[in-house]
Amino acid sequence: MLRETKILRWAELKPILGLSRMTIYRLESAGEFPKRIQLGSGNSVGWLEHEVEQWLADRIANRIEDDGAPAQPDDGHSKQVMQRMVDCVNSGYPYKMNHDYRKGC
Picture 1: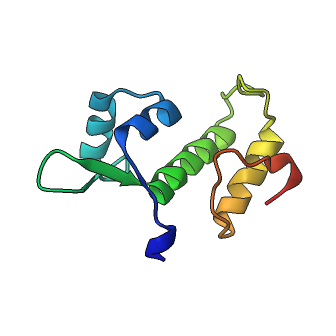
Picture 2: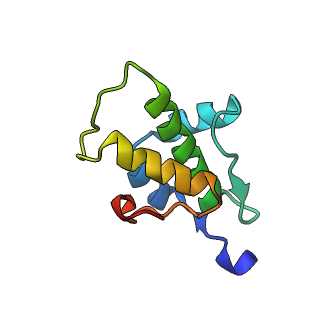
């Protein structure tokens, strides 16, 4: 299991989320984002990739359930494709950033 565990450093996390360090810190403090893990005795920290991916999947699922959400996000994926992605993650398949969920899990 540990061989499959990936730790995301800030440089990898920022482009995925598009959130500032302070926003991530506030979300962590409020218990709304996965906690960072200390990597050394200094300031080196990271986030477990699978926890961040699950957080993203949960956010997408909440958006799908929200009646006020736009029918299609900016990247052109339909609600149906996003629902397939959420279904895959909820059924135990790992979330993959660049996977084409139009084809299923």
